[in-house]
Length: 476
Image 1 (cartoon, rainbow, N blue to C red):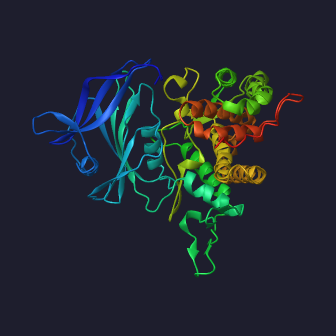
Image 2 (cartoon, one colour):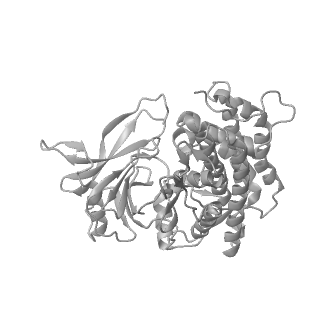
Image 3 (cartoon, rainbow, N blue to C red):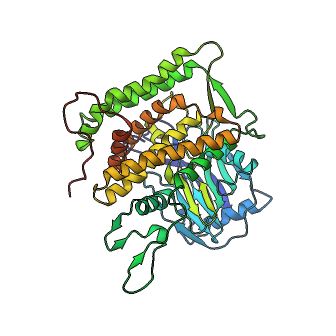
């Protein structure tokens, strides 16, 4: 959505009845460069009108009941997708949104099922319905069980999810919570008031001794655990099902050149940001590394030039937004969540050269590696940017550990060909540019993490005048 465009809602396009007094409503929007719709859940009023549902209206519970029933009320354009029957669940509580740039709303029903209402629907293929259905058929255990979905078909024939019901993972924490806690303990850093309490595990053992952190068994190898699960996900997505009978394909040099064109354009957009002042003092990190960024993405074009007849690159269905935060930790282990594609490619960031659904596995790996560095930057910022050297060392070792575990898991499945490491430098360079663009627009407080990752992974240009490039702590 363009930041300057005036957006308004038109008349409701269609409704799906959740019950006699509630409905899922699709409404078209105007004032946007591309067709888009809003999905809202409404209840009837005493006067016969409609209002937005509240937390105690029972809409999410009603949707769980819809999935449990064998007969569905027909409604034009809608489809109920039943995958794994949900348990009986009553009572609702909302889940606080953690990503303000995504207004989707999640509700826990009966502490057993999570219903996510998708608020904004763009006129492009949404990866979640097919991906989740494929993983359900493959019985992949690395994601929360998907009970079902409500989808709506756009005028252009694209099936878009309105609601998704998944299994609730009790006592779960997303990766932006549990990963930094482990890094903080690994580096022996103190928070104000005592030692770091990792994942709430620190307990007082006596009035004079203070809090002592309980050693977490994941402290030394959690990057490897993430890498192994990422590889298992890619193997599952590359395994045929009735929905994806040929999940792995090979593309030729033309596709590489289109990726190069898109990546080079993003590098230039980031460079152009320095003229606007949006990077604050970040230009001292970025500008000495522009030559290295361009050289990295130019590797895609150079690789395409080496291809002969029959040469190509393996592509498959990927996660599309695979970062550390998507790895949810709970008493049962790890699970991957959120198959909605990269928000950095939403709206006018999406170009005709981008296909966020069918890509090399290296695209996911590049984003995951960069996000692992971001985990360390969370800790560096938390401690006033006084631990940069320690975080740099941890990040380098952790990224290598993740990659080693990822490679080993693919080799164990005899699918090492899924990971083309020749693409990794270019995809990492493009990913850091995507995230800089996204942060300046949506989350400026995250800009320091992207710039620090750029500083670590990309050498500065020899002889470039100016500061060393270490990002400074924000002025108080």
